[in-house]
Image 1 (cartoon, rainbow, N blue to C red):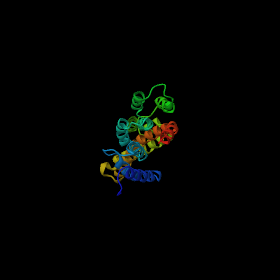
Image 2 (cartoon, rainbow, N blue to C red):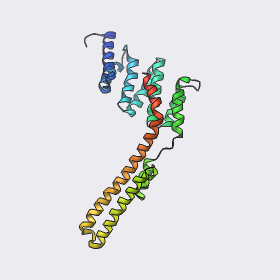
Image 3 (cartoon, helix red, strand yellow):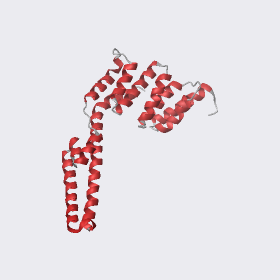
Image 4 (cartoon, one colour):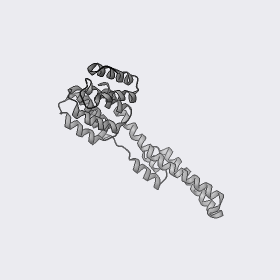
Length: 231
């Protein structure tokens, strides 16, 4: 772009906005980033805020947390700053880091600030949700196949995992008893059994994560839509 100063910044910002509205958040950030570099730019503060928002849409939550924390300290416009703070809180809540969200909420907002009532409601609701531990689910299924799935409420899947793993283990034992460890029946049954056993542990871990996501999503959608609509 050959023009200089405010006109150049306006063109860059509008290009970034066009890409963002077309949901090309990655390319949009290429242009926003040009306005957030050191120096004075006409659209520096809104570009910082939108850069963080694009990271959220790209599901780069870790980066969004880093850049939004930095933007909070750099943005002077009160409305933009408040929106970025809410986005930072949203990032923590999306990763189920309720304590981190509370820290940011208490640091930047007072109890009399009615503009974050919906966010407070979400935080309180998430605190009451009983989540399932993926590590515990996997450990339970490692000890008793299917137990981790039952722990997440998938009792039928748990029984199927237990039956499949038990059957292949019994077939492996029969093969070993008949022809020792070199028998074809033992080798096939053992390989199949180990596959079922490993899949049973992995499946239990994933089921716990899915359970938590589903519980979170029911509460999360309304507040997420509200915060994102502020930008």
